[in-house]
Image (cartoon, rainbow, N blue to C red; front, side, top):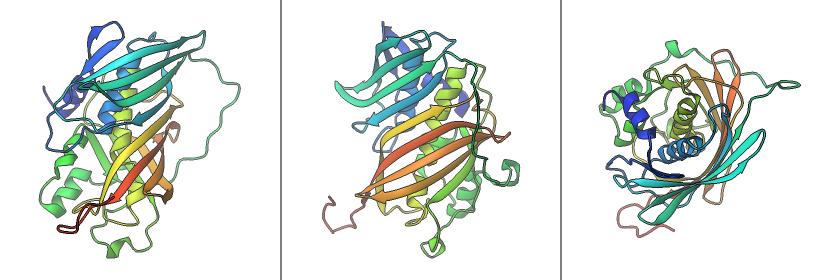
Length: 293
C-alpha cells in the first residue's frame, strides 16, 4: 500500500463494477463509523468518472444519512442528471449493505473567461514552516496519538493558533480555527484527485470551530459529534499537495447543531475553495447516568 498518501490515492481509486456503479473500499477501523470525508471524496470520484475531463467540479452538496460501517465496502450509484453545453450534473448515492448512507449532488463546469473577479483578502497568519505539525504537537503533550488521528496521516496539518488543553484555557476563545494543510507527498496532475483529496481533508477540522469555545480539541471528549451535511464550491484551480490555509469559523450553534464555514486559500492568498457544514452535537453520558437524547 506504500505511504499514507499512496493509501489515500488507493482509497479514492474506485472499482467500476457496472455502468454508473462503483465500489469503494472502507478501511477496517476501531472507530464506530466511517469517516465522512472519505465517503464524500469517494462519491465525488464516482461522479467525476462519468464526466468529461475538461469539466472540473465547481460545487458539491451532500448529506450524511446514516453512519457507515468500517471495513464494509460502499457502492456508489451515479445518476446522470444533466449533460449541458456548459454544465454537467451528477447525483450519487452511497449504499452499504442495502441501505443508503450518503447522498451527493455535484456540478461540473466547462471553464470560461470571467467578466470580472473579486475576493475578500486572506487573513494574515504565520507561514506553515514556522508552525509545528499537529502530530508533533499532540504527541508531545499526550505521549500518544489518538486513534482518529490516523485519518489525518496523509496530510501535514499545522494549527495556526496554539492548542488549548484545559477548560480554563478556553475562557474567551472565539469559535474560530485555522490550519495549514497539504498532502504528505505528490498527488500527480489529475485535478479530480486533488479536488477529492481536499474534499476528504475539508471534513477533518471544520467542526473544530464549533467545539473550541466549549472543550479542548484533544483529549477526553464531552460531546459526540457527527457531520449532517457538507457543501463545497471550487473557485480556482489548486493543488492539494501545495500548502493551503483553511480558515474556519462557526457563526451559530443551537438546537444540538453547529454550523461551520471554511475558506481555503493558496499561498498567493487566492481563495480557491469555500466550505459549509452542519454537525450534530450531543453530550456524552457519564457512566451510570443513563442514555442521552
